[in-house]
Image (tube, rainbow, N blue to C red; front, side, top):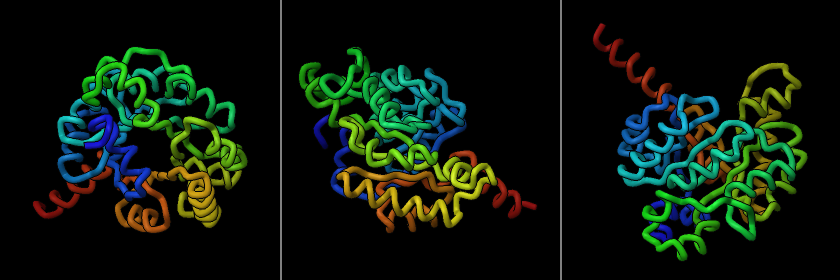
Amino acid sequence: MAEGGLIGVLALRLRAGDRLVAAWCTAGDPSLAEALIRAGYDTAVLDMQHGAFTVETAIRGIAQVALAGAPAIVRVPVGDFATASRMLDAGAAGVIAPMINSVADAETFVSFAKYPPAGGRSWGPHRAVPMTGLDPAGYFKAANAIHLAIPMIETRAALDALDGILAVPGVDGVFVGPADLSVALSNGGGVDPTSREVDAALRHIVTRAEAAGKFASLFCADGALAKAMLARGFRLCSASTDLMLLRQAAGQELGAAR
């Protein structure tokens, strides 16, 4: 097991260059997140931005994902950096922060996600310490390395500031939201995460992340796209969502029954 126990596994694997597949969880039900991990996903992203997870259900979700043997990531709401700290205290291996559009945004996010000297995270890791298997002093020394701070890149401003965001001490990698990025790159013309403009941006983001020695990750709506993007250099991709998978399986079984 990595330093930092289950929490530290995610950082270790990403820094080693492993290609990981995430279960994207929006329903707000920790049991679904646990079930997807038991199906073989490497990690679960508990979505508090567009999904139904609350502080309470996300904390339960972190525990149930750990029970299934995997680390959890939480996507917090826009600008809710205090919740980022709470999720790390509760044992999340990483936090995704949406709409990080500047170096200043990234620095503010890091200030809540990392302990000094990298940031100003407040001490109170009530569940994180026992999950790592470390004593409090050991956890404090290891925490900044084992917990991941992952800003989202999903606007023109974020693309323009990409190198600066990647250079912020404490930023471990970036996560791309292709739908919002397509809206931004089309100047509000529509939602098309498969557009040429988005594809070019994805290539640019992977290249710049690799040059900075950090990882790029991406939301993918299905496994085939995830496979292609992992081959391109993304190190963490979702493959569908809990509700999309449920609807797909329900349609198949209803079709067979009727």
